[in-house]
Image (cartoon, rainbow, N blue to C red; front, side, top):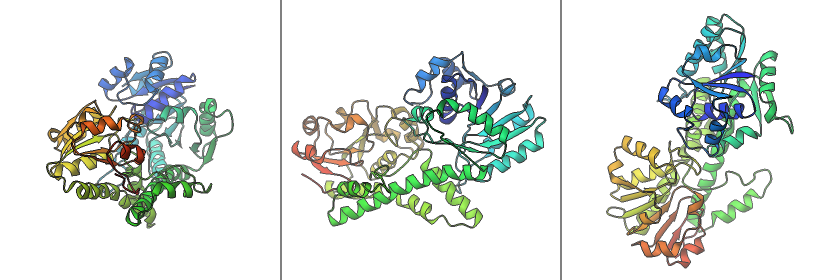
Length: 439
């Protein structure tokens, strides 16, 4: 089958490369010529494991890159919309790029096709796209909602081995196109869920809100454990042993970040407000997500006797491991607070230093944060070490070496990923999130 994907960012490029890898003829369309040139050279403009291999393996035979929308959609059975939907100031999703692509495709299409919204959009967007298409189309264009469920850091595997494929459409013809297109990923059992466009649009927001709520709830339990002297790790394991709950997303820490959970929760709350439905749980999860960073700062100020003049080493900048995405990363929120309180900050991350530098410059604090690739060296002379992102290499470091390098003895485990006893045995003081302090 021949398809086009409009938008060569995170969602569009992963979809295009994965479709191409199973034999689909794909053209990825983007307005950024600089990005397109990099992609033609096999350079993926962001870090996502395995994605660069897919791009190199399939370009240019089955995967091509173009800025010419008219040529790219000619003769294609399906066109995917995978452009950004950034939040407006009121929390609503900005749909201007989605609707502009829909209008352009409708005007330029030379044959019947399925127009598939892959971008995360609020309920009612499919209807708006259909209205735009009806106004401009000269051919039969069926509009489909097909939300993505990709985890940054494991997106390729998520696409190639999906746990569900949601297709929202009233058109049997469009559904058949999508079913055939996804057939290579749907062989062991039927993972396709056909539903109305409205249901498909809600699925994405509901799923992300549910996961974010689990994180926020466990962070509140961690705060309670902190007050009464309980160990949230024991609580987590016992609670998660209930099959109705499970252990996934029951990890307390510094809170969630990234481009999805914060944005999607705000959009869900805004949609509810527009429709007269109070999304109280989603709203509470958003508010609760601000508390963990404040809690860690309280512990640091208490244990260090204040933060002014203190040297703090921070391990991790990305909002989660296996990505270079620092959007709404708790680590950067923590660093900004530390700088504002007079601390000297040195930070590291195996992938996100460049993207973090951009954000630090935007916040006006880049000159006050020293970035380094060496996560041991930034501990030299530090009064405290904070683990802010649970990269594998940070889980079991040489604590004896760290003790020799540091001026102080305090290790703050913002992700509960360290073994407290190992920290204590090296002569350091351990404090996690909702865990008893040691040392």
